[in-house]
Image (tube, rainbow, N blue to C red; front, side):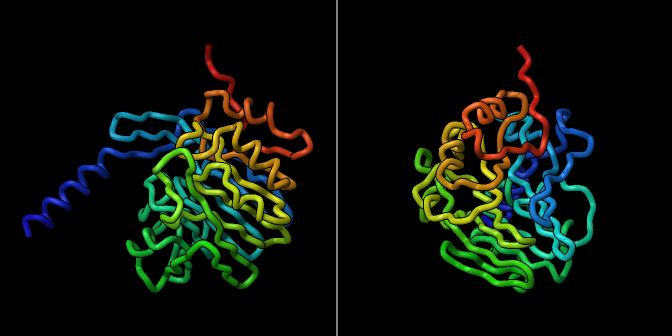
Length: 260
């Protein structure tokens, strides 16, 4: 009993030391990006405070995809109000990707949640589908391919831990959601990707602009949308400068020029 109380105390204490809120650098109303019959959007820049050790304004991995008939989220954080989601995808269980509070706020009893076991074991099983690399799932108007997502340079997202990426086919397009991954050999197997949503972060826990540009060159999507990077640090410009100019690029939030 004492052990359980102590564990609960530690959990509550740790949770109180992690906060995500809207950033001062966020645009008032980030405009969705249109692709096929889909609207793809982001909550915009958010402010992260991690134990007081990391304070950052960054564009999260949170994605919202709407068609005439479907509402889908991936790793949702701080989205505005909308109708309950049809599907919510979670790539892995780290706090900036998985929020039970956000899932509860954006869903109802009909929402299906697709995620790795490290996430689904913490949620109501009747609403969840535990996904594994290699799975192919069919829903009404939506096809899902579950793909690898892991680090080669860090142990934070190790291969074999079932961290996930997704390829969603809907609205006449194929959307690749990479998750927190490095540029990995499995990306060569991705075919006919219309939209690639790629991290361009610091390069330790996910791709940086250089490795993301190599990933885009390998995947050859019709459009690249960057995510998961610090805003105002110049990564948007770096990525834009080195990306193959034949690959179209759009940002959820207009790049901010770093202050000198």
